[in-house]
Image 1 (cartoon, rainbow, N blue to C red):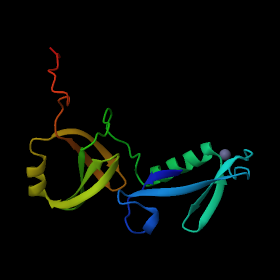
Image 2 (cartoon, rainbow, N blue to C red):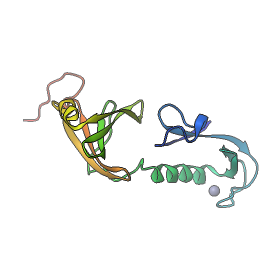
Image 3 (cartoon, rainbow, N blue to C red):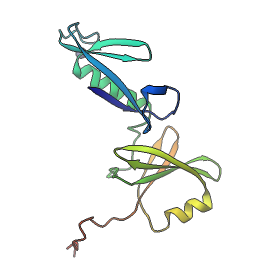
Image 4 (spheres, protein in one colour):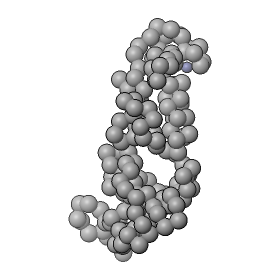
Length: 157
Ligand SMILES: [Zn+2]
């Protein structure tokens, strides 16, 4: 059993971060009480970078959520935006340069860095579906098509 948290900085946590930038907490059952709320066992013992602790499932979940929040996984996004497979976002990293991330297999993956004129070319034909103010700056989210995948015609009118 494992809990995944999204991790932005690559390389810093070595084998505990997968190639999608997710941090994995490995947990094993433990009979010790939860160190946060004192709930009696059975609980879960986690290990991370030489540290370990015992927490109940509820406390461990909020711990993982807290990591995700700190890493910006829950940065406020414009109302109504819900990431979908194959969405992309760009964020300016320095004047004229943008990092491109794509949502694949349930995680944002860094793809490449592009100059502004190449970015303009890339997003031509894509729909801007949301924005957010993240720890790293303003993100703009794009989607290939708003049409449903089934190919059935929408009866919107
Ligand atoms: Zn607890």
